[in-house]
Picture 1 (tube, rainbow, N blue to C red):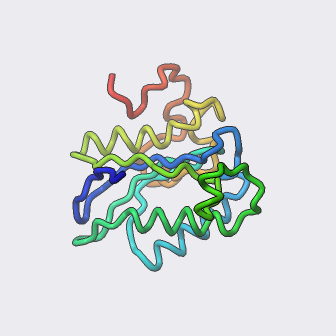
Picture 2 (picture 1 turned 90 degrees about the vertical axis):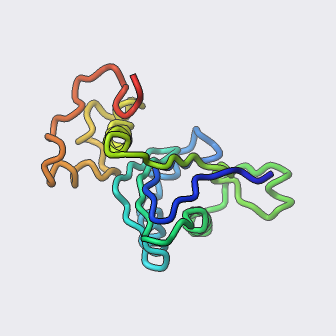
Length: 175
């Protein structure tokens, strides 16, 4: 089955990528491996990473592709493959994955959203940075170490206590 994906050269995209087993914590357990793989792929297939949060079982990120480039699927394939090859193979694999020679680390699909305008961008950056609070990992975004939040604080976009005490969990989501 072929999936329809947004296809804009030089576009800015929001992505959600999940582990197959949402009860594992591979991404934070091996965050250094993920960071190295991201760096490796960015060197060979450049893109700007506008925001990122890595949680135990999924990640959210916003990328802007270079002018004339729309090939984010290759980048995700390289990231998923590179990470999978560098972590111990101890996951459960379905018969289907075994027959195809696939690891069982990642969900096969991922979610992408083409950012439409400045407001959409702002909402999604907020969503990325509020996600560890939303999932109960920390009380405030500044406490989560696997995020670009501190870079945004350093740039003056957020105050260090941004999102603290908000119990709506609606950052980045439509009201």
